[in-house]
Length: 416
Ligand SMILES: [Fe+2]
Ligand SMILES: [Fe+2]
Image (cartoon, rainbow, N blue to C red; front, top):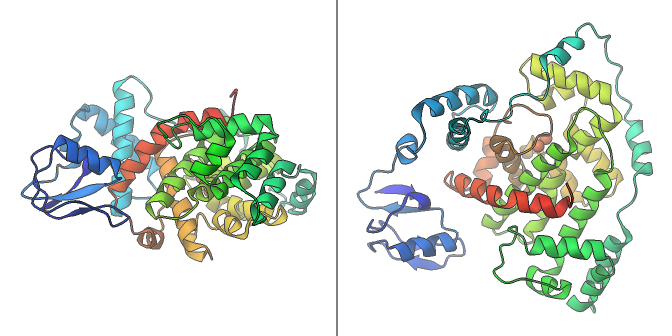
């Protein structure tokens, strides 16, 4: 008996145990022979793996032997350095490294470079040699800057008020959103995108409220509003599009994991993923020279960026992001996921922080965008245990992120 990924199942294999989905719904009995239809059913119900009688699970390379072994070997060599801090001892990291190598190998086969390797040129790295020591950063600037930031659009407050009013209906919420035509078209675009994957088109906000839910829609409005404000902050040493792409990939992955953990309002986790590295955007904006020196030192010494941030600045981007969240009065639980996304064990919102922690690692593994970090961040094993998911789910999450990211980027950043 072997556990096999749903993607590797073929008709006529015999189930060694019952197939039950995450809601406890019984789908197929032990002893049943699989058919094309039952495999499709399992996929539709979000089943990740099944136990099969008398079958050897294919090894990574054997199961995916459509790639050229030389390209795969080259991909693995490239990944050795990227996984320097994350390692591959843990089974989840081993699976992620496998998936990453496969993606790189396919890129190499197509004559592509196999991924992003550095955001810093060697010439630039030399230019910082001999610089004078850094002054400590003045965190007071964060408060001043916070005061100068525009507040969330009034429409967000009005939606929140309407939701808090027990007498308001879905129609009332739709009325409030409907007054902002740009927001309405953006929201409907997202609701009709691969993010939700609805079969029929949703063409009014009231229908979107009825189908998606008020809290979920409010979280989306919040995400759109925050991006609008922060996207206007030009920052040196970072490509804003790349930064938001990394954030969106993390948000999408967090939402998918939250769905598997049956967390209500998965959109809240999407927003938490979207904002997890917001502190880095503020660092690049407020302390560009410090940020540049941190970036170079991290690359020169092959160290993780957030550790170098702490050493050189006494605070890392997670701390800066959390300070900003506090001063901006973002929800308390959101502030916790931002503050502890690299140390989820310290969080007072442990499960959600663990979700964002893993989603960030996945976004790095997929090399979707960049917030400046070159290496794949290490996995907190306690966070993994707390999540209690199968490593076979990782390939499903990556597939979903791949399918959604371009669509979601287009609607969150129209015209980009
Ligand atoms: Fe981070
Ligand atoms: Fe990140």
